[in-house]
Length: 301
View (cartoon, rainbow, N blue to C red):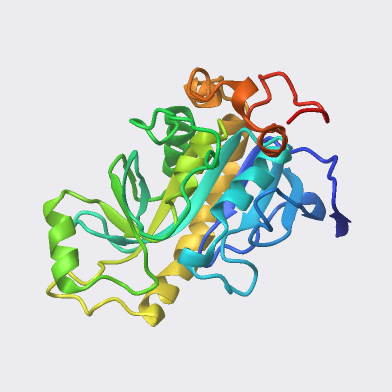
């Protein structure tokens, strides 16, 4: 495996963000590990570049190898910016979740199409301190990527649920029974700790984004099941991760070859601060996200 640092010339079409249990991708060829520096700090780990089924991909372990970063401590901005800087246009997020519905059993795959964000302490935008942007987020999941994942899940024999609401809590603690019962009244499908603000930042970066949610447990609402424990989650997760790896292999090629969609023009007319009123240093920092604007020069305020 090669290693590169600093400015990276390698490119990838699809980014895969691996959650709990998914720390590597089997079947990768021509592997290189790259350390990407971003204006927002360091990503969770080195990014693994390689080819999966002939498609250039970039793989990032969300919690870092060894699972050493808690959900609330993840540098989501650096992770998304780093993938964008490598040329990624479509992102597949793989996440362990708790089921909030009887019909979604541990071991099932859910492809949510909506989110509820209950996180409290995380920075959820690239645009602040001198620049304002309001991207549309009514449909937070890319329908094209999710459709390819659905077909892939069916082809590998997964018990898959298309659509549903992913509720993201701050964590790292699991829910109380009172909270879990309330969320069920809201019609939530699954509960997790990591897809927010990840999905919001992907939209600001004009990346297509979809989630493979791997159900590991029934949270703590289910009266006939034991309350969720890490041990129970890990046991189911090992099976889920093996299935997710199969799903990724059969889905990555149609995802990479998909048509361009509205996700990749999300910033069009969304930046409300006139470019000539944004400080030059800030324009340089955000240029990757504002590449359709005139690139800033070294001169300026």
